[in-house]
Image (cartoon, rainbow over all chains, first blue to last red; front, side, top):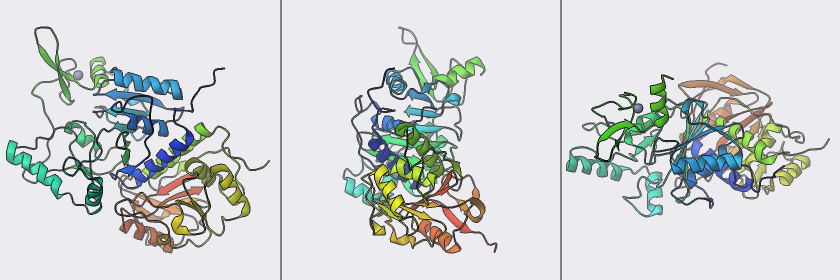
Length: 278
Length: 196
Ligand SMILES: [Zn+2]
């Protein structure tokens, strides 16, 4: 018998306890960024070390894990994270959203509606939505404490004055349970409505910035907007060229060396499902 | 047969944590927490599992008068490495029983508005859950849900309603009853049932 050289899911028990305590606080205070002592992982920052630590701390051997990057299961990043957990935790994996019990994601929420039996883990590069307006942590912490989110609205309104609409299309800020403004990670704003009243628990891990936050199931998540400029998602004039879906988020891809382009689903599992009639 | 902790710590703690996390994410919904460990009387095995899953040298524990037996203190110290403290305000976790009078919740660490996570978690063990004492709503709950814990008084539920009123600071509670746990985080709105 080959005894593994590391603990179940790589992290030692003390690290997992610390992260698990942070996750519980994050759930108890939805949208608040809980500091945690992020550990070095055997992969570079930017590869989702925050998400990996959260996933490692919530996994059990009974789980079936799906990992997506930009909606696809077969990118280098997604494949390496999946392999990491197969090797360190022996978990089953899947590419099918409906079969997964835990989905770790970078940059998308699956198109297939999530269920109460699933957990969505987001990899987050910059957890603080106020950071580009206020670089000092002591100040942003105070702003969250006092619910001083006026600057955020000013920034969005400047967009409207300048571009006639809110120019932010990714990492679009939203308010959780009428209290904390949070950064939903660089998902397209197309995915923001899926955060709201979602039956699944949503956990967010930022490794470099050492923050964990959460949205419990069935929690109100309201994208910031204005009465005269209500929040709107991206739309496309054409359906997915592969499956014909008119409801999914589309990526523009180059299909030949003459530069011809087409629009296809970014969620590759959803697209395959539509084509197979699953 | 003496008291014992987890036999396969990594896997048992992983399963226990998933139950605790599900409970915290769905306030008022009892979740099975099956454990193989042997805890000394009067520590409920589910309470013991919460301790072994979440507590260590970084989390001072406070034991209520009923829970503070020599056997329980020794068991928790031995299996978690956590220091036991006399003062409630220094505790990260507190272990209590529903059958004794609950101390004022405000005496436990509430966190600050800058760091609401620096607050205590109470683990209260009881005989059973019911759906009659209070009506809960808020994050994690679709609509409303009825909840209750045998032995806890109206005063306790009023204190929990007050705890929510101070959100985002406040305490979170994990209840343990006969192989099941349920939770009541500070984010949950608590309304007392009007029935007598
Ligand atoms: Zn498609």
